[in-house]
Length: 111
Ligand SMILES: CC(C)(COP(=O)(O)OP(=O)(O)OC[C@H]1O[C@@H](n2cnc3c(N)ncnc32)[C@H](O)[C@@H]1OP(=O)(O)O)[C@@H](O)C(=O)NCCC(=O)NCCS
Image 1: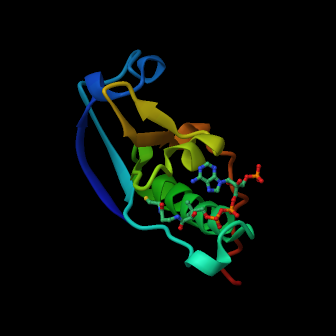
Image 2 (image 1 turned 90 degrees about the horizontal axis):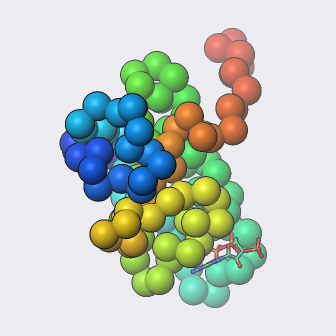
């Protein structure tokens, strides 16, 4: 995971452009992969959910518009299953608005 550079709002999917500043920023899921023999067993979903939770929690503290991913190897459809939306002019770049994530419960700081 890494901070995302500036993203022009005009590049975002249409419904996300409304009432937004000219640029947004957020986080990039830089790498998510499951080894060949372990695909299809739910590990990808678990890893993605873990990444989303981390980003959600960081964003509650420091802000940010979305979690971006630059999908490889036809994985865009995998991300779309979890609510990511493709950029109209670059469908292998996808974004999930942090405000669209299900809220993760607060953690007890003593834990
Ligand atoms: C994409 C990847 C991370 C998915 O991991 P996985 O462990 O195989 O996926 P899961 O078993 O958790 O699957 C969860 C769901 O996503 C679906 N899915 C998995 N890979 C998919 C793909 N490439 N396209 C569309 N849907 C996909 C599964 O069918 C499953 O759906 P279901 O719940 O309706 O049955 C894995 O295939 C992978 O490592 N691919 C190669 C590397 C890669 O492409 N990484 C992403 C680049 S950014």
